[in-house]
Length: 226
Image (cartoon, rainbow, N blue to C red; front, side, top):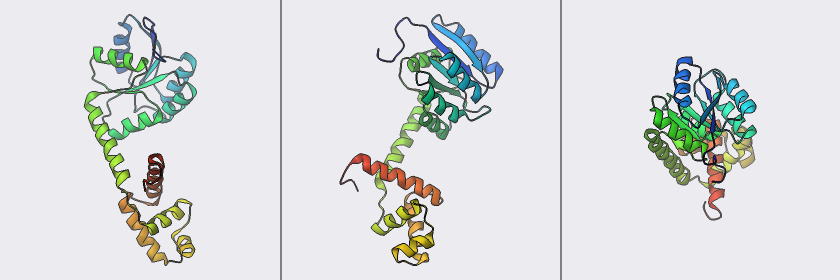
């Protein structure tokens, strides 16, 4: 069974949601399951961190939108209490929220309105060490991931564009880059505009972030991938 919950073991669960009625409804559903133990409830991101530290539930259900830094809490819990598996239970169908949750360390993403049996099954899956995503959202997330991978493979910077963005990534201004490479500042701006277009970036910060991901992807693919 690896790190999964042992057969016949009780699954300890925490719920964090700032809507008391919704939280009570979920709690009632979980309390009806014979091998589920509801160990704690809360309503804020700070509550989530406290519950994870004090109770070490097997699964911690968390809303996306509630007081505090939700994704920061997920990140902190995944580092400090790695045995606590976080599952988002939310109305948000936004792909950015789902991606942020998984990047922070969540193992599940379930939309509110799910049936009782479906929620129970999702919790069992996450408690057993698997990842669960609401099926209607999973296809969109997979599509987005494939698109991002395709874009990363498709970035084709010229040698001069690569030179310019590397210096910008080191914190240089356009003027400093121009002086170092023996170009005019106008030419550097032209190269940066081209780089941002190729990287689908709206500004210098996004361009640097995107090109760093591109370099990491190249490195992961090994020599000769440029």
